[in-house]
Image (tube, rainbow, N blue to C red; front, side, top):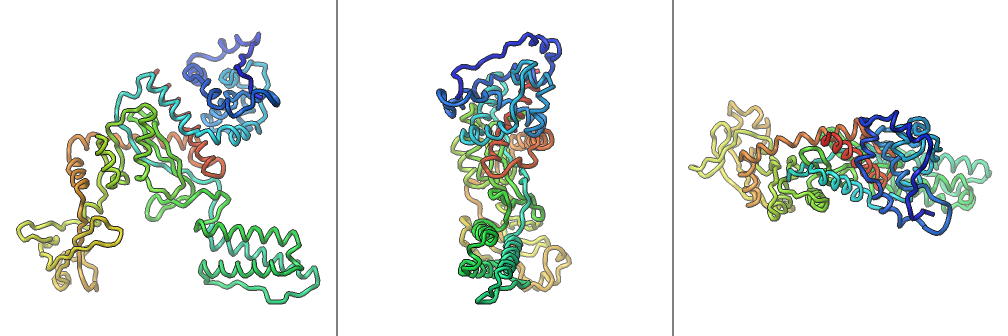
Length: 484
């Protein structure tokens, strides 16, 4: 049961707080800055107001979670520190002699109260509104980027996971048959090296079918446990190429040769470091597809967006059309593929000859236009005389020895791409692009100071909650810094 009014503690020892906690204390400053009654208003409908025991005040539980993020502590440690740290007790609105809660209460609060309350929109919106009241949102530009968070658990390939669970079931099945003293009607399928994933999967399905058909083993609890685990893994393999205890985490890529297993957090941030929009996704999602949702979220939170600053991942045609239609300047360089370079330099268009020329000055012998499936714009492919290339002194790095042809292709740009290319050569574009690296400093704070480098629990819902609490803490700390 949740009382209809918030009770304030009364104690004869409350004067200790004024004597021992100075005005410069960070927790005192946060307590004076933020009115946490919004938590009570948002979560009150989740509680019964007439039945059951008196519940822990949601504001108190929320403040515990905020302390946990700011000081990067576990549930047990943050409760234990609040026993003797007076700055913690002052922030929690507890009297000096008051007892603390049980750490398990925080776990239940996260799962039962915050999980279904859209914590990202609630907490991020609250801090942005707080920044707007203090005049910190005057600049009408936002910086977009994404950072990754590692899963709490490691991942193994689907093939390795299936083989491990297959062997455990096979071993348990053989032991069980030996104990019963009965033979098997058919031989058990063995394993072999060099199989593909589909072959391993077919072998596992055969073992499952065989085990289910044996009355002597299908009733044994140990066999059924192993069998259920294997069947569950077979279902997981259909959804993902990796297996982990964290089923929502996915493999993403930081570069061609570097990958991670976990989640992505897509962020919109003002130039002065206030995060105005957040989207938490699985790790394989592309950055550029969240430009529109981040801009719209920032607008709902009260930010007038006139400029979007981002890297090349956000320069897709859909984003160019979206920003152009709303009068927003998109400070994002076109992907090199759209410029037709393909990593090669020195190829130029000879307007007099009406064709492409290679770095050595040789003209293309013919041109062909191709429109492949999935390529909306198509491309011009220029063919060069391979005999000349074989004898050219500048062939190193341009012509691959033994190749039977040499081509160079240029992707046809849409009108939107042409206008974006003109804009990215302007002085305004170059000046605004200088602010993009500021988001990297914000990511460093989230990961290195507030513990956002690794997920605390399993599942996308839990990751969203962790992201919401971390961004709330980061914004509050930033507002304190800007208003000193």
